[in-house]
Length: 305
Image (cartoon, rainbow, N blue to C red):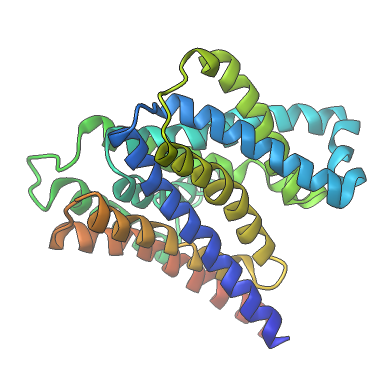
């Protein structure tokens, strides 16, 4: 039992680590190679979607085709493919393109705060004290992160900040929208098909075949890493961890994504993080720990009663 839990923790750490490295690799492609964010998003989703769908069909063909036998679920999958999956991928890489991988990944972690606001409005109920604490931490952290502590200036380009906020919003939709589909069909079919659908649509709209960058060996390697390891394996590892550990534990371990992206951006890409940005990043990422602690406390209380 303990070995299974350790395996789950390793997988839950490996997935976010690969996501973080993938974001930094994408920034290097945007900065040092003739690769646009539109092209990379299209190719990333298309190839990863093909690989994940093939993996699903080889491991459980019936389960991975079942969603297409129910037209309402199929339509909802199409909706999620564009509003959830494609939107989260597109806004994230745009935030990296106009800003940097570290800031984009950290701002993505504002999604728990947005979920708190959404739930408060939808249920017409005042947030819990722990939720208000999370909102204050997220707001304070964002201000410190994007201003260097100088409230009259932006430390990152305005476009980078705007796309970072859109990344957090799309990550919220990505989290909330597919819950029923995931419960009914599992993660591999939903993630694989939505990536494939989004990838096909983006590739046709953007016409990736007319925007092929000038490749060299290093560019091929970086793109291959983003597609294979930073997408397919990252999703498989993180989703696979949920078989052995709770979603709450997995969400906490997801903090390795911004940590790895920030570390690599500082070391290899020259991104500067001062004390205000560091405190801001800690506050934003800390909201995940606060919410996870509240969830675990609620679970233990329910068991006791």
